[in-house]
Length: 159
Image 1 (cartoon, rainbow, N blue to C red):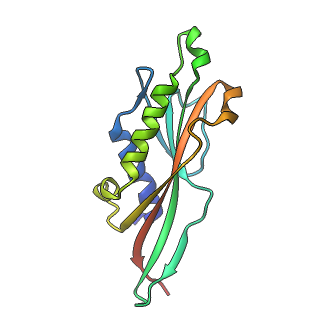
Image 2 (image 1 turned 180 degrees about the vertical axis):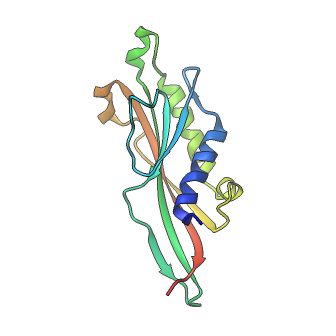
Image 3 (image 1 turned 90 degrees about the horizontal axis):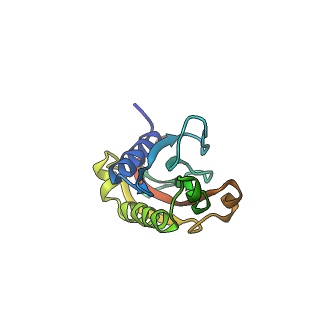
């Protein structure tokens, strides 16, 4: 059986796919990655990457000794061609990118959708937004935005 974290990544990808987001009229491709990397040759733009956060999980044992509280972090990042590429016939508008960012935040601000996707262990979700538009990507002619979602899950304790 897959780990809770692996199932969580897959469920996040399902939730994001079901949002059917688009930028500048082009549907966003959704990819689940075990590491946060984009393969430009294989993935077109716009793309939404779902990957494990660099932040490790946190685990606390409850007083009962039979269950533990584990918090996992997942990054969800949207990359799209920037407005400067519009002259060439491709690109995005900042408005579309920001609307997609807002839809992502709303989808994960409560654990309802992630539970419906099969992660019944999830009790609480916390959304930590990144910068609205990552300036570091501007030199690459990309608009990038994202969120980190922390999922607090209750799991059986192990010895």
